[in-house]
Structure formats: C-alpha cells, structure tokens
Amino acid sequence: MMTMTDQQLADFERDGLATVDSPFTTAQISAASEAFDRLLSPPPYPSSQPLKYRTGTSDFTDPALIDLVQHPFLEEVAKQVLRCDQIKMFRPPSLKQTYPDPNRPFEFSLHTDARLSSSDLRATPRRMPCNLLIWISDVTPQTAPLMVRPGSHRQIAEAIGSHPAYLPLMNNKTGQPTQIEDYVNIKNAHSAPTVVGWFEDQLPDLKYHDPVPLTAHAGQVTVWTQAVVHGASTNTSNISRKVIFNDFQPQGVEIGVTRDTSGKRRRHLSRLASLMRPERCHLIEL
Image 1: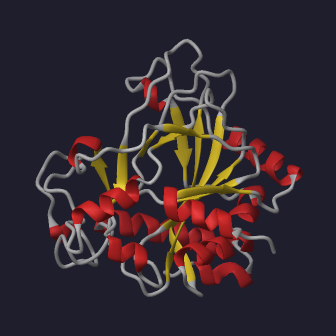
Image 2: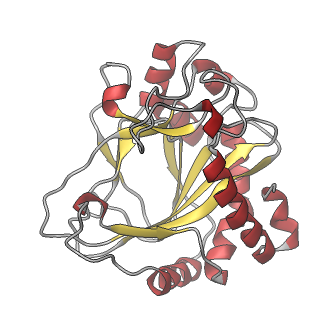
Image 3: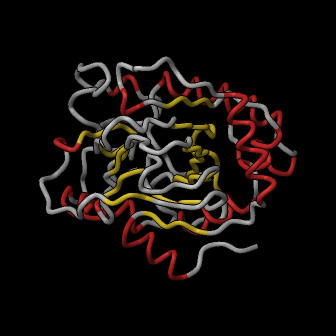
C-alpha cells in the first residue's frame, strides 16, 4: 500500500503539513460527495458568522463514508507521522461542508488548536494527535482553502521551551479562567498536550511565514498538525468545499481532553465501531 514518501515526510517535518495521493477511487469519492449532499444542508443565510458559512456532523452511518474513514491507508500514514506501530482514533471523524459565498470578499482568521513542545515533536512515539483531511472536492484558492503559516508549529515549540503551558489562562469559549478539573486526564497545565484553541494574539510574537492557501484535489489526503497556525476562509467560488476530518493518536500517549468532550467522543465512537468491519475496530478504544 502506498504511504508517504521520504520527501512528503520531510515536508511534514518542516511545514507541519503535507498533501499525498490516496488509493481512493473516483467512484468512492463521488459516493461520499453524494452522501454529504444528503446529510448536510446550508444553514440560513445571511449568517451571524458569514466566515463560517458551513455545516458539519460526526453523526453519520452512510456506508460510502464509513468505507473511507476506516480505510487502512489512513492508519498507515498516521503511523508513519506519529512514529508508532499502534494508533487509535483521537476523536470521531467529522464531515465539514463550506458553502459558496461568491458575493463576499475573501476573509480568514488565524489560530491554533494545539500547542506542542520541541520534546513532543521529537518523541517516539510523538506526543501529539495527527490530523488527516480527506478531500471530497477540489480545493482551490477560491473554495475556502485552509489558510496556514507553514512551519509555525516548530517556531512556537522552540519559543515555549521544554516546559510549556498546554492550557491558556482563559477559556476561549466561555471567557472564564481555565479549570484543570474540567479535564479528565491531566494534572496541571504542563502535564500533557491538549487540543484547545489559541488565538493568534495568545501565541509567541514571532516572524511567521505569510499565510498561504492549502489546496488539493478531490481524493487526496492532507496530513497536518493543528499546532500549525491556521484558519478557515470564505468560499468565494460557486461550489461547496467538502472534507472529512480524521484524527489519530499513538496508543499509550496521553492527550488532554475535557470531560464534556470525552463523553461525546465516546458515544460517537461507540456507534462508529458498530458500523466498521471487525478487523478495523482496533482503531477505536472505548
């Protein structure tokens, strides 16, 4: 089975992302695209948040989608990137569809969803989740590309040193101080990486790469880390952007999650396990 080449792995090391060809067929991608259309409908427009004129779900049972998210190719790629022999799903796969908004100007905002130290990146296995995006539609500079600052994950890792604070002082969603008690598996802000949002003004003041659009063809897979500075953009084209998010982590590596998130993930993963082929269920740990 094809996986990542040495050059693609080097690209990931340097930039925090790499896009690779996959074994998915045109028929598989077309069937997945049709499933998106059945499952997701545009929200009312104009939206209070036009930049996020999109919908998504982790609640799906369509065989065309299950076949993709359980494919062995994704597992093998994640093992390569995470430097390990055993992985599990970090959270349930999710569908995201960004709808055409051709009358709006191109806009984007930037943030990270994780903070990693240099030792996390060097570790074997790595102390981090691995994020894989299955592109169900072509992504051009007009079709809501993810905007990224290549290599920013490494810049931040070096800047925060070997004893990073993995949690912000304030919860970005609630505006309240972060409570360690809200997490199920970490003792303090320094004990384990977490997937939690950091706005750009909360990050080290460094000379980052200019934001560039992440483009890809339908059927390709982008491997990346959410520790890269990135952000959603508006879809100024006339077609929807469709993508499946798949996140993995090494077995035995602790990644901090909140109590609320942990319960939701367990419910979705339990349902997904009931739909997957028996030989693929090792990817889910309940």
